[in-house]
Structure formats: C-alpha cells, structure tokens
Length: 433
Image (cartoon, rainbow, N blue to C red; front, top):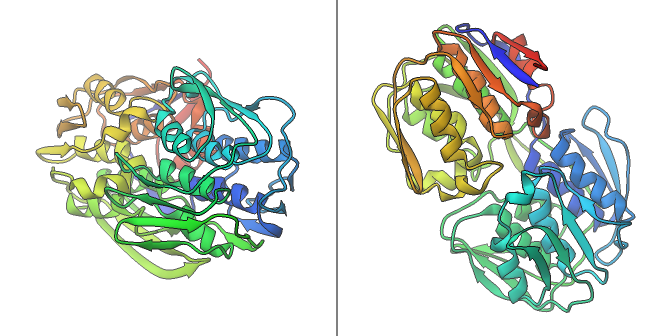
C-alpha cells in the first residue's frame, strides 16, 4: 500500500485522532493481572495494541472484542496468567515485546516472544540486561528477538540506573518488579513518559516517585477499574505540524492527552513559532486532556532543547518536517533512541528529506535540517509508520507530487489515517501499486 499526495492544500476542521497507543498497551497488561473487571474506552484498535490484546488472550485472559474503542478485561490477578499455547507473535510492536518481557520474566511458565521481520532486527539487550540483574533468564538471537523467557525464576528487587532515558525499559523493569521480592526502582537520566506509573496508581498499586527515581514493592494487588484513554498526542502531532506549515490552515484536535511527560512536541513547535492554543483542559482518569487549535504560522529553526527530546521522542519525525519548512537551521541532538525504533529514524528522515531537496547533516545522536523549498519525489518508509505519516504532511508544502511507499504499517498506530487526513484537506490517495 502506497500514499500518493498532490502538492498544496490546507488543514481545516475539527477531528479526534485515535486513542493513545502507549496507554492502550498498558491497560491490557495491567487489566489482565488485576483483580476483577476493567472497563476501557478510547482503546486504540491498531495492529500494535491488538497484538498485545491477542497475547494476553493466549494466556487465558478474557477480553471482549473491541467496539468503537470500548472493551472489558476480566483480570486474573497477579499470579493468574496461564502458559500460552505456542509462540506469541506481537507483530511490529516494540512496546509489546519489551514491556511483556518484564511482565513474563516473573511467571511460573516459560514463554517465547517474536514478531515481524522489522521487530526481529530491533535490539533487546536494553531490557534483557536489567531483567537479568533481577534474576530473569532470557535468551535471544544476538540481542534481538525471538526472546525465550524461562519460567519459575525467583526475581529480586534491584535499583537500575537507565543509561539512556527510555520509557519502555523503565516500564519493563517496573512490571518485573511487581513479581519480584523486595523493592524495585529505576533511575532516569531525564524524565520519560509516565503512563505506567500513573496507570499502576489508577489500578490501586502504590508507586513511589521522587528525585529522578521511580519504584515499587513487589507482590501487591491491582484492582480492576475504569480507564478512559485520551487521543494520542503522537498521532495528533502529524496534524499539528501539517496545520502549522500549510498556509490558511485552522484545525482543532479534540480530547488530546497532554501528559507533561508527552507534550514536548507542543513546546518545541511553539518555540519554532507555531500557533497552538489549548482549551477545555480537564483531567480524565488521572491523565490531563485538552482540545488543541492550530493555525498556520511562519516557523523558524531552533536548537531543540535536549531535555525535551525524551518528552517528544515519537513525535520527532513529524517535527523534522516542520524543520524542513522553517527559516534557518533546526538542530536535533541527544536523540540516540531514534536509532532503535521501527527503523533508524534519523537515517530514514535524512534520506527522505534529501529526496525532497532539503539539506541536512546527520549526527550520531541527531540531525541538522536547513529549511527550504520542498520538491516532490518518492519516499521509502522502511516499513515505519511514523516516517510514512510525517512525509505525507510534507506534501502540504511541496511543489510536486510525493509518493510515500510501503505504508501498510500505518495501521499499527493510526488506523484510518488516510481517510481522516483527506477529510480535513490533505490531498492524499491510497493505492496498492
């Protein structure tokens, strides 16, 4: 499946993007090991989150079929998961495999996690190392999936200092800590998204946080609850950038999660000169939510603050499209994490920007982009959903047609992206050839 985009246009209207992917993964995991029923609304019915759902069904958890983002989970308790019937395939979902590795490390049964060809190339040593320190036994193929997780291992609480800020690694260790003897804590070099800690608290589990460290005591109980998942700011980010760069745009994004560990994209775009207003701010199930209005504005290049990078890690590809439309240079450093996403996103973005005539310089930990005139061309996504959606928005400022190749993976995080984008003004068509 490919995207074909005609140049120009503007984004106008009011839309709600799908539910937060990070929270959708976590609500399945925590609801499964809670006591009692958990009712969920706003669940993202994308392939990644559905992979997590399928894996927990395979371990004996009754989960209703999602319908318009609503589902229910019949929790089996902390020790109630059953041995899966065969290898669990989580598709393209790095969140699934890394977080589940922690949760499965403390089970009485052994398990195997695998995925698609893209996932099989992604490094897992970053979670295997701390889990091994806790007593887990995990085998891999040269540090990559499949992961074979031995059951019946007694885990012990540890303190682990993250060498690189990563919400996935932090969450994996904390989930393992639920099954460990004693106290488990994680030290962060910089704040990362805190959905795991917030949601654990929402399920009635005590989490201690302070001075750059998050921890919990093992062996407690989670209680089933009601969870309303807000719209995903990572999905909203493509539309924030599109409306900012396309002259005459005036777009409202409804019910967007603005968790302070996730809203770096808003601050970065505002620093570049974007016109973003928030209204109707409210709290939904412990998560802050707002409606965002974005109007087109002239953007300027900036040095992206290093402290904002972990708070906008998934939105950085879209931000680099804004950089391509800004006056002057935008410098991104401290983003090594982008090298180990669904693709090497630094290399993928640099390649695509070059294809469109935008000057850039790649660094080991980032990229410098010089704003300029965007031409047309053919973009290789390297099967990465965020690369595909980012370059789709570039067409709003392009002088010629853009083809974005291999976009099937967009459904992992944003089912219905093409239809929603076209509805508000992106000149996008989908074709199989």
